[in-house]
Length: 308
Ligand code: RUB
Image 1: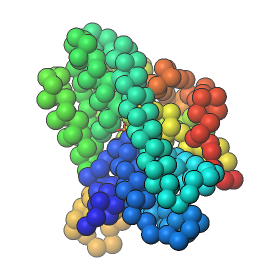
Image 2 (image 1 turned 90 degrees about the horizontal axis):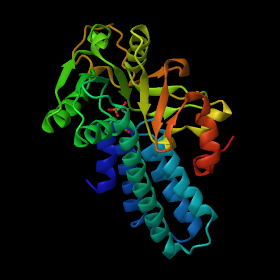
Image 3 (image 1 turned 120 degrees about the vertical axis):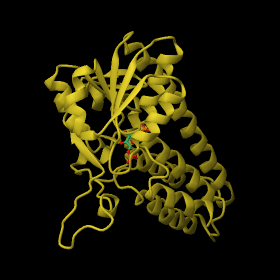
């Protein structure tokens, strides 16, 4: 199996998980493929590249960070004057820039988020987000001491990744079943989750169970934040697109269920903006009300190549 096929398989099976990792590997896979495309003309190259881009996008339908960057790479190529021989180099440059920018953005988010964590407090998180992990690790590195409560995140148990990463560096960590969220939220001082999508209405789409956590946070009056790079904004939602929520295989929940039983396995849910205190981003704390303005002013590339 070649690198491209392996990435496609690993994203589909969640071996590569989390919006940032999915986008990073998709970019690496497209770059790898672009160095191996046989094409007679630039037009022919672009047709083939578009097909591979689409294969990557279809691995997980609720991942605009991946879509935005792959669309940007192809859009950039279409508009450039480069010859067919120079195309792989241009893709390489754009991909490297993207990977560098994401790394830098996440370091900024880690610093901002770490400042928000109070000494001896308890932070509640859900599933596994590399962005949230960055904040917790940075806070711990800076000498702050605090506790973490997190969910196991059924049915694929991404909470185990969170547990391993946090206990490895010595952060006192407690894992609970997802349905115990409303019981243990009372012990927390703040909730921080990651993000898969920010919509034009500033809603947050993240791992299934996030809405439940946001509602539980509201009920006990603790702040609820989402830590995310702004490029997870889905520009197509500006033009009325309703973000598709990925439905996963019911077998992930029950391998041999009774016949005629219907099982639903959505990967994500939608948290409305009124439950979110702020997004913790590379531009600092951004309230849901101002997300679109920040995107229009500072991230015009996210909007490029989007067709109505
Ligand atoms: C993971 C998940 C994460 C976001 C953000 O879901 O919902 O909170 O993707 O992750 P899954 P990151 O395991 O189904 O991909 O902060 O790493 O981008």
